[in-house]
Every structure is written in structure tokens, then in C-alpha cells.
Image (cartoon, rainbow, N blue to C red; front, top):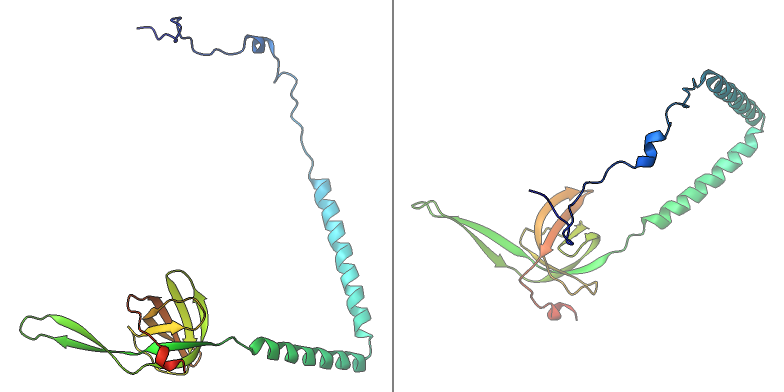
Length: 192
């Protein structure tokens, strides 16, 4: 069976370009032996010069008076202390909390385990927000002890409630990993 074009003529596969039959591409190609030994020698010579320059600079630095070096070191230490003091200031966020208390009830007869969550009195505390995304938030605090399933509402204009999902110890405090919460309590009574 013959394959045909739309106009009815026979379809032909593409053939090599007839002009390429007479081309002598590889006949004039010469294999060059690249001599990289001379390049390696040049690189080695440059390395030796660099080492000599560095040694001379070090010898000149040793000749500088010790008094000037001590004065410079003291100035640098003072500048570093000031920079560290500036970096230590961390932005804390006020967070409202509805603390959860979890009770696990196990039915001895049937072996069923039920998790009962009760909520205590609301309070507020300060924390540092480490990471916040659309579906999760990580905060660090050393102010209070919070259990899993507690509801948090940071006062950072996000208007989102978070449920504590995981708690881990870090730097004399706790890192609370949170997920979005379906429970949205009001904290108006704490805002006074």
C-alpha cells in the first residue's frame, strides 16, 4: 500500500542532500597534538611568584609596631560588641492563646481510645515568629508552657488562627509548630 499526500501524489521520504555527495569534509582534517606541558609550566611559575609576594607582605606586617596593632584590635572589638548588641534585638509578637488540655480515655472492654480536648482560660504571651507560610507557622517562646491542640492567634494583622501541632525544645524554650485551625475563638476580652 502506498502512502499519499493530500493532493494524491505519492509520499516520499526525505533523502540526503545531493550536493553533499561531493563534499570532502574529513579529508582535510588534521589531528593536532596539543602540547599542554608548556601551559602547565607557565602556571607553576605564576604560583611561585604569588607565594613570594605573600611572604614579603607577611614580613613587612611583622615589622609594624605592636602598639598600633593593639589599638586597632581594641577598636575592632568595640565595633563588634556594638554590632552584636544591635543584632540581639529580636522582634517579639504578642500572641493570644486558648490553652488545650488533652485527656485520653481508654475503654477497657472494647479497647477504644478517645481523645478528649478541653480548653482553659485564655491568656496572652510574647513569642518570636520564626517562620510563617500559608499553611504553617513556627514560633519560639520561653514564657509559658503550652500543650498540643492549643489555639493561637498572633497579633500581626494576618487574621489567622493556628493550632499547635508539634512542640520541641530549643534554646531554653520551646518551638511550637502550628497548622491552620478550624476553631476560631474570640480574644476581645483580652485586648483591654
